[in-house]
Amino acid sequence: MSDVVTMDDLSNEEILSILDDSKRLIPVARGDVHLPLLEGKVLANMFYENSTRTRMSFETAMKRLGGSVLNFTSVGTSVAKGETLYDTMQMIDGYADIAVIRHPRQGAAQYSADAVDIPILNAGDGAGNHPTQTMLDLFTIMEAHGKIQGLNVVLVGDLRYGRTVHSLSHALIRFGARLTLVSPETLTMPDEIVRDLRSTGAEISESSDLSGSIPDADVIYMTRIQKERFPDEDEYTKVAGIYTLGSKDMHGAKDEMIVMHPLPRVGELHPSLDSTPHARYFQQAFNGVPTRMALLCRGLGVTIPKEVK
Ligand code: CP
Image 1 (cartoon, protein in one colour):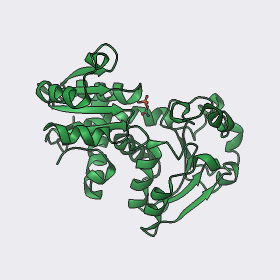
Image 2 (cartoon, rainbow, N blue to C red):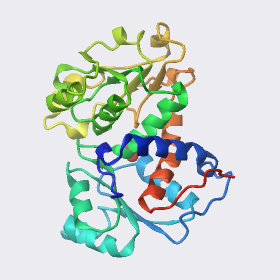
Image 3 (tube, protein in one colour):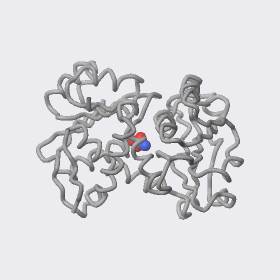
Image 4 (tube, rainbow, N blue to C red):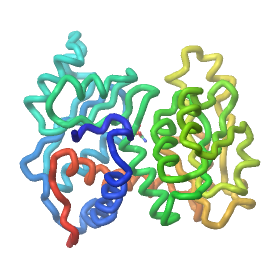
């Protein structure tokens, strides 16, 4: 089974192997080494919702490995004429070897995976999951700390609707991290997810206090309060801008603490943070290229050489 719809589709061994492959692929991701492993293969990039990083890093990953990309958005296609997701996916099954899908509806990636034979990679389904983001997040943490076991990862912001933190929290627990969940009361992590995480025996604390969580943090994972996911704009206004970090907030932080963010940021990370040694979000966005290369190779059954040069 080569679909990746949630992190449950990958065993711990597979995750570690993908992270290992990703590391070796960095020179290819940068364009310093030519490695056309996916020559002749076609990726369908199916984006029913806006994206900069996920769409473009998948496209870069495919092209750097010699493959080609069909870019699909809901604007300018027959979606505007009322074509269903099911029918669209039947077309893609015939046009491409693998597909990446982002959709505003939770469950759309699983629905697509069930509808076609080609491998499906979930690039974000509503407030559900974003497993390929999790892979690049894990990679970024491993690059910084060399481990996940025992780290205190502080997840901040929109934990209710944030698919990045839904996927990431499960994966972090599987590798032995501690979680500190920081959010306003209206945006706490859904109860069923917290119950699931706690059922593994994981150490999880919940708080609404970001500044008090900084000194003990190994990773601070900031997220945007997502205006587009709120059913009521007044509710959004009450919490917009509630958490911000800038260079002045780093004084009590551990030297090796990193600040991550899936991006885009809309004010929660002050530009003064960018030049501090804690800022890791732009590197994190680049890490989408090697990790998505490794995921594309896995999906297409292509082995990455043990030595890349
Ligand atoms: N991190 C992330 O999913 O960014 P995009 O929405 O730009 O793809």
